[in-house]
Length: 159
Image (cartoon, rainbow, N blue to C red; front, top):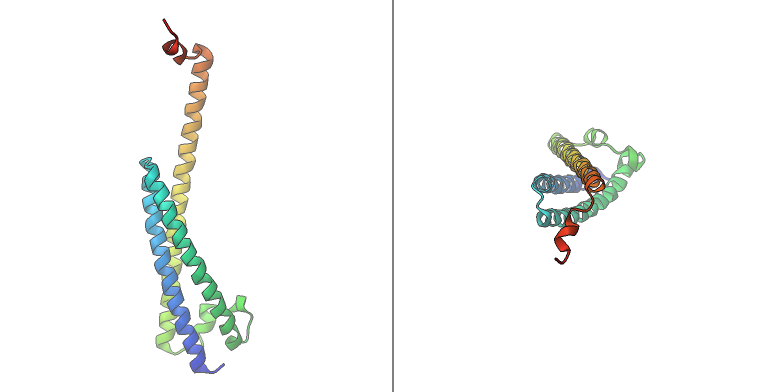
């Protein structure tokens, strides 16, 4: 592969990484909104956020497939297997401007995916806590029903 052809593929890779970063930023915004909706028990908004997330994940999957195809192509230029293609390995073969773009894209993508991972962790903890509260409430109600009998039965009896 000629160096100009490799640069074209790297430019395309940069565009894919930028698009992935944009999708992750949107996913992060949805995750933050979803956590707040869970916290406020807004069921309709939670469903809407889930639908938004699904659409974004479909876009991300498409971008990932494109990125993998590019990595396979670039592996030949680097004389390595696709799983050995790294930003560092590519950057070593690139002019300064393109190298800086590629490294910046990697850093931005790593940063936003880390923030997304942390936000998902916060939501998971919130949901786990909510589940524990519901279980505790159920146990209390079950205990009350066992001691007092059905409270609602007298309301429905004909007098």
